[in-house]
Length: 289
Image 1: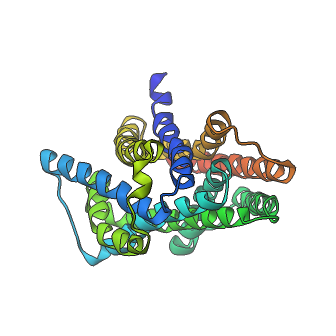
Image 2: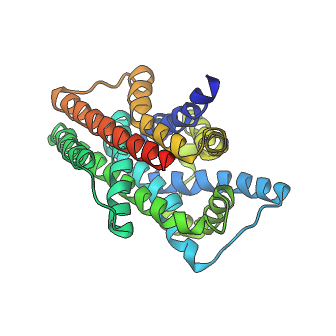
């Protein structure tokens, strides 16, 4: 029984990244600087772990895209989204990850898009539009745009990395791209380099938290979960991330969705359910072959 619950833990920890980072960004630390600082700390810890375990590290050109998408792009786009929108809304846009991944995989691998996936795309698009419409009076729609862009970014990373993980383990890939991304992270953060916000306790503690917990601990628990229940079964749990973010942001930050945002959230949850059902059907089909 406990095995079925273990994969939910990293999803909850990753969900806290949106909430804590919202506090950090709202207190003056620029999203691009947060990205650089977070992955400097997490990357150092990952490197120490790799050395202690004797893991292989690779720095070839085939890792450039995973480094730019899985580390730099994904984090930067999420944190930029948090500048303009609620943590709950940016978290909800993560529902586009399985949708975008399925679409991209169908393009790259020439797989047919199922009816359920088509429905999920329809509901997901409607949900994204409704979330954006709820913030037309300000710049909240930018948060939705950055969030959806982050989801597409992660889909590119996921599909691109599948071939690489035939040569490297998931942890070896993570450590390698975390180190490769460091120069890019700091180049784009340089125009916003200031340590003044770190004098604020919420910013300093928040930075350490997102580096140590979502940026380090959650990945270990996730890889353990994959080993425990298998990659296919574990993949379903990723779809819980948007829901965890919504609940945690509502409880801790007191965020409330207006009418249009609530409709958008409902539409995205329906899309998430459809893509999850489609994924489960594929897993069962593969296991029965």
